[in-house]
Amino acid sequence: SAYSFNTSLFVGDYFISQIHSLGYFENSKFAYASGNGIDMNTLITKKVLKIENETMTIAQYVKTFEDIDAVYIIISAESVSWMDVPTFVKKYTTFVNDIIAAQPEAHIYVQPILPINEEKSTKRGYSVTNEKIEQINEYIIRFANENSLWILDMDEEFKDKEGKLPLENTTNGIRFEKVCYDIWSDYIREHKAHK
Image (cartoon, rainbow, N blue to C red):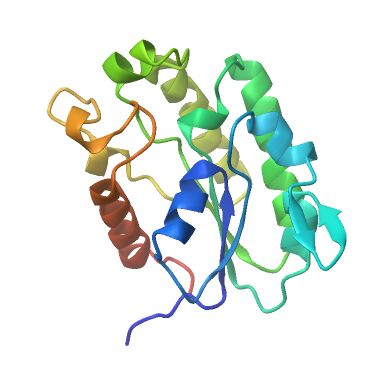
């Protein structure tokens, strides 16, 4: 039977805003911040979401949902931006812990950061590298294991033979084309670990 994901909540940055606007998982709930200047720090602190007349942070918004049985936390390379690895890791941990506290009964999925196309992203002035992403991902995976979170390890699905994100599948080296989101959503559907 097709699982409808109607008790799933997708949380994150620009990546999740794209999933939402492209119409994937239309039965699910979404909580994200996207746009210029959004990074791991603003994802935690910025009051980006509005309900009725109240503005709230992503974690505060996540807390307003009832009957959620799975939360998918997806952060892209875009939110690493200027941060060094220890700073990012510290902020990331805070963010994930805030989300867990907001939905303590839900199964929590985290996704290591997907690789970028450095050739393109460097031309666009991004400072993040795949080496930096790999260092961050080692931490994310360790953190997930220590806290019994599900890990969406779909890195290999996106890389070419040299381990790079193929040029044609990315607009600026970091943001994906629709074909990548198709791969992503198939992976999510096939790897629903919680019962």
